[in-house]
Length: 176
Ligand SMILES: [Ca+2]
Ligand SMILES: [Ca+2]
Ligand SMILES: [Ca+2]
Image (cartoon, rainbow, N blue to C red; front, side, top):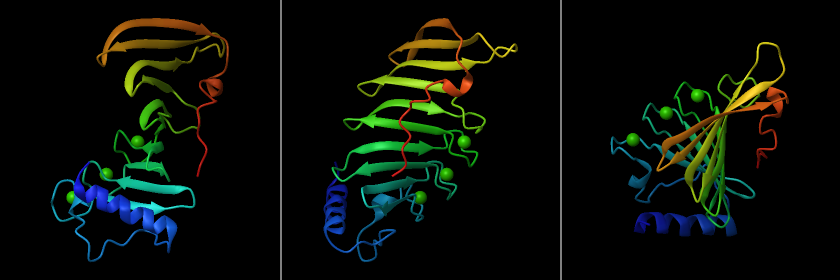
């Protein structure tokens, strides 16, 4: 962890204890760590909530935020939303455990039903699932790809009778 990040986190702790500023104002502080590509435009910002803070990131430097990570008061990430195809819509959600990604879902067409699911082990991608609709409306399939070193090593299809909306419907998606 960089010295700047440590100073920032210390400042953040003070904000939790005392007066709250939202979004955080870094005036008078060296905030170059908010400018990932050093073009003079900040790509990272922070917003404080009752239970922690959001880190908002513009990863492709088009000035539009495309990843929002929520951190608890212990500074560990809890969940994130992201726009991983950079089309302006946040289709991907991830939950974290012990600071590492645990599972992700992607709602490809933004209809409220998850289409892809990713399971991680210790933050490393273990398998991915895609819900495949059957034209008849029942006996759908799940395509599951297993990974090792992020490389696909196994592909299988699993017949399922449940509806598309039930595909990983228990995914942790509570808003702070
Ligand atoms: Ca920048
Ligand atoms: Ca962006
Ligand atoms: Ca998107």
